[in-house]
Length: 595
Figure 1 (tube, rainbow, N blue to C red):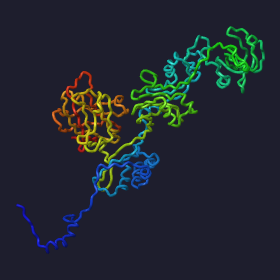
Figure 2 (figure 1 turned 180 degrees about the vertical axis):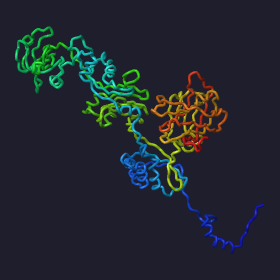
Figure 3 (figure 1 turned 135 degrees about the horizontal axis):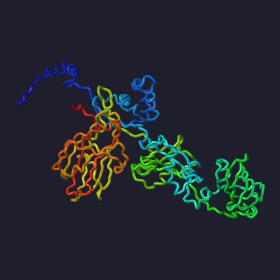
Figure 4 (figure 1 turned 90 degrees about the vertical axis):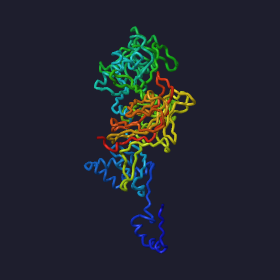
């Protein structure tokens, strides 16, 4: 039986008047308590104005000075945030974002949480970092001579290009495993016809080139006939319109006089083989052998004894491995190569300073790229040999600049915003969407999807459709998880497994981790995580804890998680494909240290 209390009207009036202050002071009864504003699931993305403002807050200035009070490095790094519009490892978001949040959201109360999206300058990938000390150079005449075993050529052919690894071992004798060389050389598809020295030389080397690089070796030389000193012995001055040199006689290949027989006249264009020398004190060409000439007015050569060859410049990329110098390769990439010479020539440059030049080439050379493919391009920049990576974003190539978007959780505690740096990734899924997780198809066996988001269940995967159990492989992949300041990071989630069987489900439903995600699950080097709890037996839809996965070996790194649904395993039939459901995923530090 409930007791009813009835108060006289006068007493009620007295209480309403006399007790008002009491209730107000003690936040009780009918008085209006202070309004609280606690919000969750907030997301805020920093603007350019925010980056400009962050170094101006007194709290941030004090923190930066305290980090390095001697040489003000901390203060310089803080100020660089405004210039770079990005944070770094030392000038980090957890240090300097709270002051901004206090300024922007001072009215939000304890318990409020917000995911802040910001830009992090991490630098280029490890693959590109390998090019920091890359050697870039063009082969010289001495280099060609080494490769040709002192036979005098200044180009390479299919037979001699195989000598580059031995040459690099000789040239870069101090190199260590992993070092990279970007070299440029002249190349011809035509092999020499005989052992004649002239067959190893480019056809018609201009006189100006010989005068610019005199080397006391025999070359095929092209110039114009100037003053004739002896028509009997073929002694004359050869010139190129600007400079001239004395030719101490020419004969045919058998040593016979040719001048009068060929009717060579001043002004004719002539090609000879000869050797530059200053042995007699005067620069001149000796050992001259006639190849051809023509009179410009006639417009056609009188004789041409050697076939012209087509030459082009090749830029090649080599790396020193345990097996010696080999052409650079990386199976995590769609392609890796040195930028072709024609790209430099078309742009009229010898160094690449505008990334758009490379982007235009990639669009032309790879008109149908696949999303997430990565291309590494080595080139000569303003500071020497270097490289960049380009990722296909949809259908276009995007430069991996070393700046990445990251998210960090912040919350209000003791009336101040602080970074929740003990939580690295949190995804409830149910009712909140897929978030930044991505789905990567490997084999759908004709289905439209395996992994998908369902608001009532979270992320779900199944290969059972319309009465058929399919053999498939599909991945759910997390966004980047930054463990740069982690101590004992752990992964946990809730999961339900229905159907399948207790023997095969642990093979079909697996969790993986990588610290170098290529964007392609099939080329990424993954490590499988071991279940610490048994998977649900498949008999019901009850959600159970996944167990704890220790990620401590990745402290200081950025990782990606992969949830692999794979019934496409050779030799295993699929009598019953399981359904896998995931909720409440968390990567965080443990609340209590394990004893």
